[in-house]
Image (tube, rainbow, N blue to C red; front, side):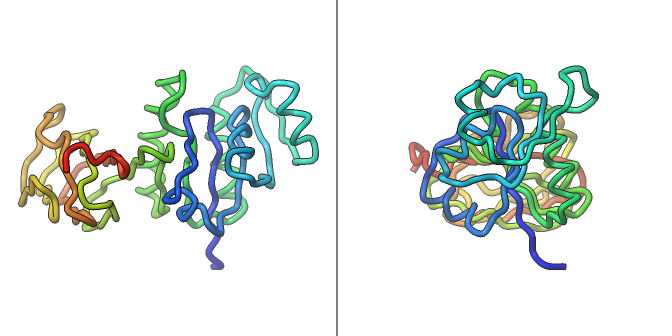
Length: 216
């Protein structure tokens, strides 16, 4: 299958950084309701705009009037973001970036997105969340590497008990560790460069702040 990276524009915070620009290079874009405002920040035009449009004001609607829209009622069984993800998958998405998925005024949506990226990763999709200043990655059984600048902060939030957790190339490494559900042991670690992770069982999210070098 041809590689088809998609970015979903969501209504949380988004800051355009050099790192974010590099991550979005070559991506296709779908906006979810008020997430369309980030299209101005990124200087792009999405190929689709979905939602009930309760978060899109008249100026935004006028600025992107030419973008194809799929309107949904406010009373629906899925969020605008989930609808946008399904639209991307139908268009052959092989990887997803949730841009504007962190921060903002709706913490319930942000928490949902954290669980959603884990579920999508479980189905074999490459996926991450970003605000430009903060990033989130799913952590599943197996080995992975997260490319972080030396000195940047990161934390691992277990969604379940984690067994066989190993963290390498970090100030506070772990080897074959059992992390109880709800433990704060893996909060506020510091990357020494790309962080090596492995896990035997469980589900977690890695939250990273690549521009926060306060722990360096």
